[in-house]
Structures are given as structure tokens and as C-alpha cells.
Length: 88
Image (tube, rainbow, N blue to C red; front, side):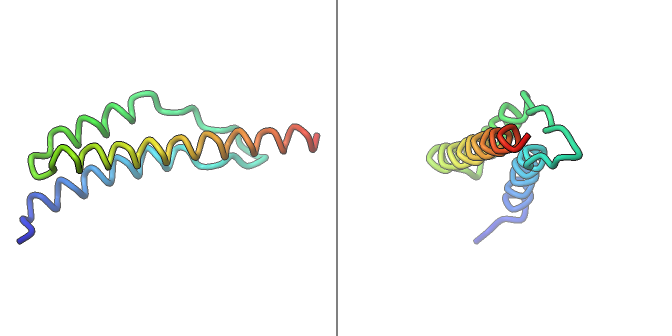
């Protein structure tokens, strides 16, 4: 049985993850890339650590997924910047 408070906590964590990732969208020519949030990973880790409904392995899996998404966005952003530099 899923407890409503557990669902709220998971949604909170996902909201924090989403907010952190939203700031990592690819740049357009009209705007500079956003500055990476330095505290977002700590906020995500703290939110996951505070959720008593998650097991240690679930916390670890969520943190690994979050890190993978952030890393993928960094690589994508750098690749985009290289392509733009070569076009200029």
C-alpha cells in the first residue's frame, strides 16, 4: 500500500530534481548558458536522505540517475558550444 505522505515526499524530491535539471537546458544563440547550480545536488541528496520511505539502495539509485542526467547535460552543452564555435 502506498502511503500519501510517501508520495508527497517522492514528488518533492522529483520536483527538486526537475528544477535542478531545468536550469541545465541547452543554450540558444540568443542567450548565454545558465550558470550551473552548485547547491542543487546537495539539495537533492538532502531531500532523498530525509525520506524515511526510501531504502538505501533506492536513494543511491536516484542519486546516480540525477548525476547521470547532470553529466549528460554538461556533455551536450559542451558539444553545442564547440559546434557553435566552429560555425563562427
